[in-house]
Amino acid sequence: MKASASVVAASVLLAVMATTSCSAATGVQFMKVLPQPGSGQTEAIILRNVGSEPVDLTGWSIVDKSKRAMNSFWFGGDSATMAPQPVKWCSNWTSIEPDQEFTLRPFNRDRFSASFDPCGFRFSLGFDGQLELRNADKQPVDIVSWTKAKDGMAIYRMGSKFIPFMEDSDMKSSIKAAPVLSIFAKALHSTNILDKYLKEGASIKIDKDSWMAKHLARKGYEKTYYKGPWTVFAPSNEAFLEFMKEMGWMGMTLTEDELLAMPELEDILLYHIVMGQEWSSGIKNATGVLSMKDGAEVAVFHGKNGEFLVHDDCVDRPSPDNYGCEMQAEWKKCNEDWVQDDGLFSGRTLGYCERSCNRCTCEGDQCGRASVYDIPASNGVLHVIDKVLYPAPVYEKPAAQWRSKAEMEAEMNGGSAGNLKGFLNGQQ
Ligand SMILES: *[C@@H]1O[C@H](CO)[C@@H](O)[C@H](O)[C@H]1NC(C)=O
Ligand SMILES: *[C@@H]1O[C@H](CO)[C@@H](O)[C@H](O)[C@H]1NC(C)=O
Image 1 (cartoon, rainbow, N blue to C red):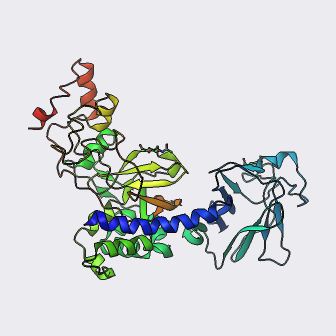
Image 2: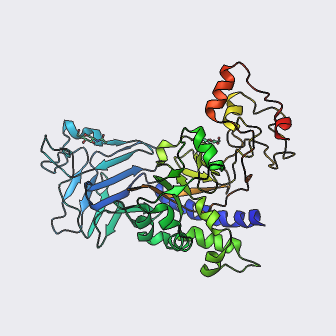
Image 3: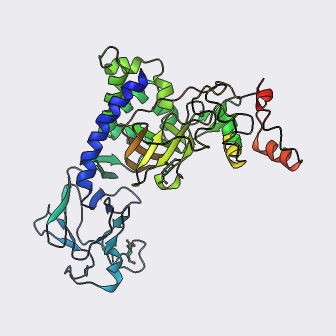
């Protein structure tokens, strides 16, 4: 029931994405503007090449349209005279590769300043503003505007719109302040997760018999509490509306009150909260990151065109034995019958170790996509996604024979690599 409903939901989303990527084919766009820096920040304009070809920006300009002077920044130009004449030290701005981002900062000729930038723009962004990106024929290709910018508030592109996010606060305030995350914020508030986990300084206890503790031990973290940082995959309001439609009964959409009353709401929300500060570029393709839903992994993928994707049904658990799936993959056990058991013992049609054995993909509707990502917070990082993730069922308790990394190493150094094929015996 859930699966068929989500196919419908995803095709709607795909249609939306397709329209966005059509306009994206023009190449270079504004991705973000930080007009009113908070403490420790500098003004910034970030461009990105979202097309598939490199773009030569020589002769392109950014025009500040909100002020009467209409100051411009010329690419490949001399920022001192603001004329479109190439100068050697700024020529590095002129070609932008697909997926590449340029961060432009204010002009600063003080060689001894930390923000020295002879290639910067010579206007100030401020409280209200409007910037136009023009190509070499002086035709506008993109425009971004904002009003009433607060300190530390950045304007991010989200599809065809620009949405403000706070950048210099903690995760709690950042989520609460984001207009596109209001349903998520309400849900986190109603389950007390905002205060218990995401507030600066919050500390949570880790049950030593939990999967979470076992996973952490394997990564070398032995403490019984955790204080952040966090990575939050935050479903947008649109994603929640789709989810409420999908979860509704007989074509009825859940109301917000019904959503907040769902018994599994807390588990669903905790699955969106991941340990560590995971920036999009720092996570390798097909990596599992540890969520606060009993340590259930969220699998992160990178698409062919640079998309940042999350999969909620690509699991390495139950793992076939106490060595865990990554080890099985390393030992090249992925093709053995007992790992590919067609769901006989694993209960999963793809068998054990779906992620580590590379059996999942993001084709079709299976993954959520981050529409805005890498929004910094004092205690973590926020990625906005277009789908509510639903944690796959996993075993409640770790198997009794589970070994820590140190124990495994000791065992291997001792010459006995364990009885790999005998996992069924071990399991019984
Ligand atoms: C270009 O060079 C300037 C000055 O050295 C530097 O501040 C800026 O970051 C460079 N830009 C890129 C895209 O590498
Ligand atoms: C990431 O991994 C998946 C499957 O493991 C693969 O289909 C996809 O092409 C990979 N992405 C990139 C950018 O290589």
